[in-house]
Length: 92
Image 1: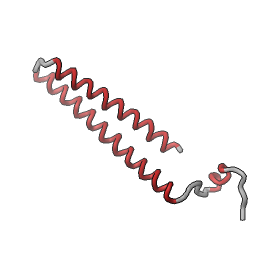
Image 2: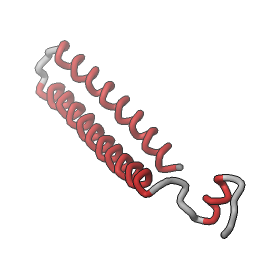
Image 3: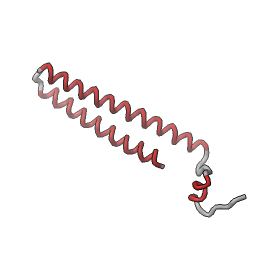
C-alpha cells in the first residue's frame, strides 16, 4: 500500500481526488454550462439579426433599436462570463 503525503502525489499517480459522485457532478455542471453558453450565443445572434432586420427595413424606431442593443450587450456579457467560468472548470 502506497502512502502519499500530499494530494498532488495522488493526482500524479492518476488516482481520483474525490468520490465518484463529485466527479459526476462536475461533469454534469460542465455540460450544463456548455449548453447555457451555446444558448446565450444563439440568443445574442438572434437579437443582433433582429436589430439588423429593423435597420434594413428602415422602421426608424430609435427606442426599439436602443432596447435591442441593450439586450445584445447583456446577453453577450452573460455569455462571456459563463464561457470564462466554463474554461476555468475545464482547466482543472
